[in-house]
Length: 299
Image (cartoon, rainbow, N blue to C red; front, side, top):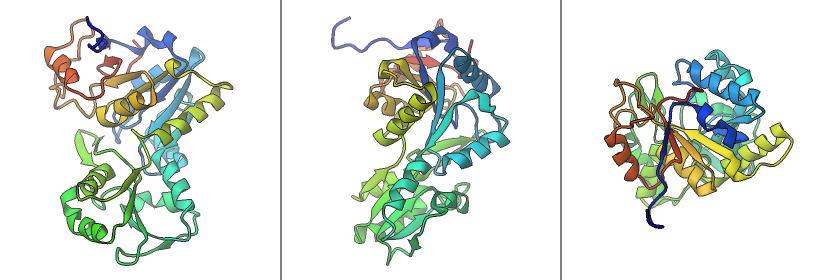
């Protein structure tokens, strides 16, 4: 192996194989510990066992809602609170940024369920002809719409050189067995028109800084980046974000990439003999994980 060749990706059967190397897990939520409809009990068990060994688990998500609202959703899905120490969301960061712009008029693109990101803030809302900037938290109807439906609005925003704050950088998310478009798809379309976008969540630095602060609080001490494992199912956000921040990462392949990896209805990815297709796919990615697992489980 030459110095120019990347380190080989390790395929593991369970978190137990590598857990001793880490003090903190920054764990994605959608696609890793639930699919929006039901919790993945083995994933919750993996986090609980990690915490039982003295580690801290922080859930880090691009959900465009405050952490308190996400905790409520996790409770409804029966994700045990013993499986995590805290929740950090892109919605939390969005609230912080919006709160600093109280003197400006904001236009919101997104469904009613995302309105808690504005709760308790003294804000002025307006249409695109009067707004100073735009917060995009998602599609108004993500069961029928795509980013293409927003082209006229994006064109008007570009005409006015409006700045967009994207409260959820994800392009897609799993809901049951469906892939649902997210705010990131609209933000990407706006960038393609030349619009300026600030992303509040993964793969960008601020959400990782906030998550490590939460981890340090949970442990009562700071932790070296090499001892922090980022777990997620999306190359573009979870793995790329960890790589940019200097964190080791674990990719859960039975998530958002399952269909393109031909794992959607197939057998579990064998850690001892991973498919050539998966290895080739990993080799084509700009950001590569340090380890790969089929589903997030302990053993």
